Image (cartoon, rainbow, N blue to C red; front, side, top):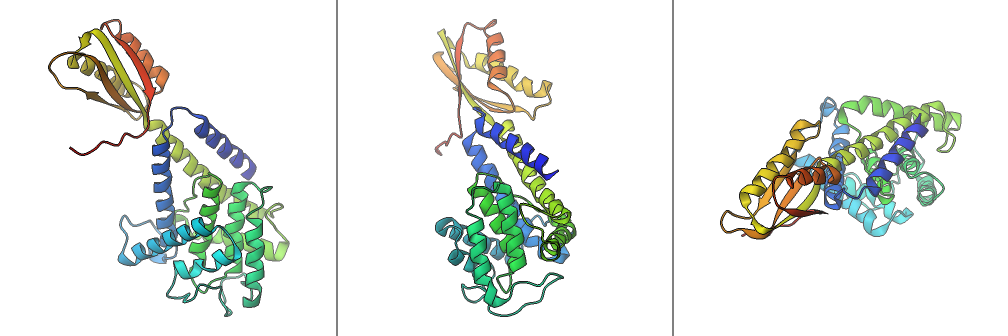
Length: 333
């Protein structure tokens, strides 16, 4: 089942990457929003009082946790994934309980799976860093390995869950995959699946390339979360395609004519199942100009848009050209 989900995910991303009408700006903006949501939920997962839903606003403490995770992310972006850079994550994420930028040097007891002994941590983190550089493992499986191995090693005194989810999403972004959002209302399910996956590794010899059924279910769970993010990304890209239409006429282009054309384009969104289309008419009433423009944004393909404009030519003596555009930064007056 996980393999089928991986295939669906890869097909979705290939379609996104090849689509000529999708905006790079919208892609960057949407991925940033998905990453921020993933961080908010990751923080809330650690708080049992928030297990029924992610709060709409951060507390002061949560904002600080979010800032810490962003700093840890930036640290990995600058330094890459190495044994040394990973040693700093605990301190960056939870400095109060990890006072130095090093792995823990004390024994800790958690759950049903014993974490690594302090003297073994550096060797196991070195092995993890090496594994995350391997090109023969699918990027999503590498991200799951980052998550599971860091959770098992438990290299920091505190903040290990947030670090595991951060490392997972960082490795995904490195490979151009969207982050996985583990929703806080699935906290108990997520914790149970992770625990069973780690128990399978310790007791049943499960591993990333030959997972026991318990671990395979955890793989499927996380892979589905990455697929959800990819589908949300494609939906945002589809609903915010952008075009500039240049309309010309030897007799001059009247603004009223443009407004009538804009109304027809907007009507496309109301007649279909799309999320709508907005059109900005550039120009003011007054003398006719030979050339004016429309800015079109919404859930409409270029062929559909051109079809509407071609029908407008039956009523108006115009020619037009349509250009796929990206975000337009307008200066304040």
